[in-house]
Length: 125
Image (tube, rainbow, N blue to C red; front, top):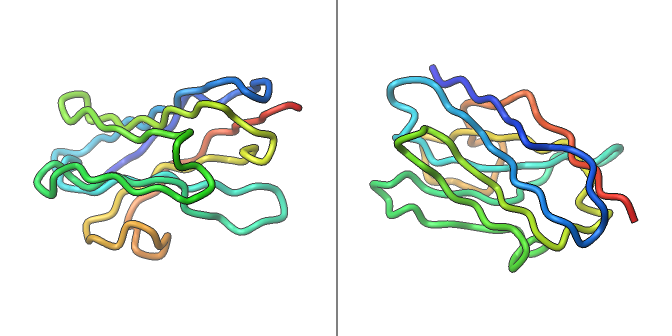
């Protein structure tokens, strides 16, 4: 069992930055690939970024909409995954969810085994 708790959301102006954190608990949490998804009002949840576990090289994957602006990273000592978000746009406004996956399908939300409760990110224009 893995528990995930997100933090770091808030209100920021367009062009600003935020860093989201996802604290994972559970002795085997380092085995999991980790991902960030987001859901805007009235829209389906969508993939944002993911990172494989360290045994798989910590490879990163990004949605086209955030490439070059967002960076995902993980600290296996702290059991924490981060999403650094720069050059934020109003269309980035959403609830951001952290999730853990034991397999290697990093893009599909149905592949993920555990989810956090989400953190709100609001970008004002």
